[in-house]
Length: 526
Ligand SMILES: Cc1cc2nc3c(=O)[nH]c(=O)nc-3n(C[C@H](O)[C@H](O)[C@H](O)COP(=O)(O)OP(=O)(O)OC[C@H]3O[C@@H](n4cnc5c(N)ncnc54)[C@H](O)[C@@H]3O)c2cc1C
Ligand code: SF4
Picture 1 (tube, protein in one colour):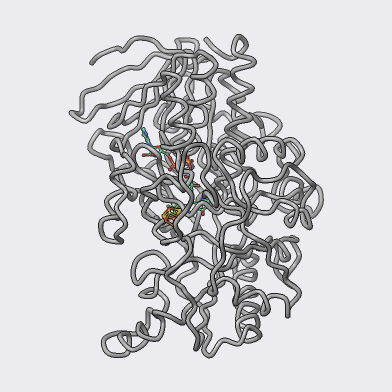
Picture 2: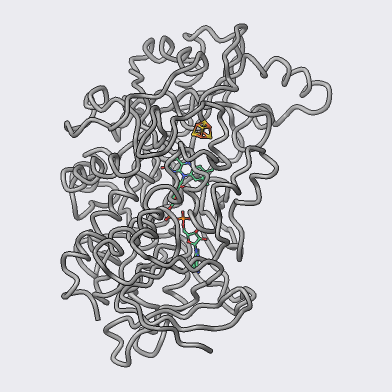
């Protein structure tokens, strides 16, 4: 066992959330080490091939997946330096004001301890930091005014534009999607070339993955990123009132202790509770930061209702980005659909490849052999999709807990137990029905709902924020209520899920938390 030199901050996880903390704190002059279980990826590892791209997807110890609607992994965590945002689609919608006060306004779900206005300046700041393209004025139909995006909207193609008329027919206005991609050259990174390979990582740097944004800034400010370092426990002092560092294992399975004045857990919604529960001690018998018993509780996700449509004309569907061309919050009101509760966020116009995530091969999973071949021939030019993301409400029964089985390092595996309720099923179905009406009005020749098992996208919750230890794990900055020098970052701290893709909010919350920590360093650090 080796004890490393003490640092100011040990960050667990080099993904979207961890990279923001690393940049802010290293630039504030703190000695920062980021411990990352996966490999050290470079842009040159991002090869535009569906088969090659699988190498950069989630790996490591699996979770045991249980419940009526067990979680799937495809849109979940990442693995290695950059995390899931190394190969995300970079759709960057915000949460809206109605997400923060659901309990007060509807008597459902939970309230956040902050309002939209507390986060709004950070959304604007993140946009400038990482480069967001979009039309803020057009979005202000649904949200308070803020700063314009630093780049104009992305170029559009027929497979996105074709939905405009259909959506309008049911009262849905589509506006240019806000995406973390370059419509022009930005801060030394090139403009997008619209070849649609974002889902396995953009090799040019046109997409705002952490390697080319916050992690690059962190490294410039001398933060150390230590790949192949798997954290198993957060360690405390004898009194149990301060964290003192973390235990981790290197690639050779050697145990190390990394002492630190502050620990930031940024290992993703399901891994953070797993580490906290495994850090139980005499002083913290239920796990660290878990006096409330809420660590691992209130796991939430998004589900999507995909409507496929085939047109006779050339949809240019190989062009564009895997993110969206257009978006709409016109069904974002919590009671937009009769008889079901929860927001919907709509996107159209993702580039389609023949295989892999959301590609042609997955559009008609009922077809095989010659029928599939004939379909693929028609789809190669004429296929497009509208996607409606729905919101799952926080439910304490949806949870992460430790299993008795262990991984190769002796860390108990995590078990994720998840089931949807009637509201989620209601929103999912309503969005399929509306999708078909839209496709018909758009003039599609054939249209169908992409039904299968109800999907589980974007895992959130497990270490939720709130006003006090009795109702939550962390405060609105991500700081543990129980241990002032322990911070938790990422979608795990969301109190509700909204229907917007989460990463813009992850960046904004992390920036808010990291800036507060830097400003109040003396009060937090040990
Ligand atoms: C295919 C795909 C498309 C997506 N598209 C979008 C999109 O369009 N818009 C959007 O908003 N979001 C999207 N997402 C989701 C988005 O990428 C995630 O919400 C976001 O990256 C989560 O950030 P994070 O920092 O919490 O976790 P991660 O990015 O998962 O980072 C956590 C890191 O911690 C590391 N780690 C885990 N355990 C340990 C440990 N014990 N010790 C050390 N390190 C550890 C992991 O290897 C990982 O690198 C997409 C995700 C996928 C997979
Ligand atoms: S479409 Fe644009 S953002 Fe996506 S991989 Fe290609 S260049 Fe990168």
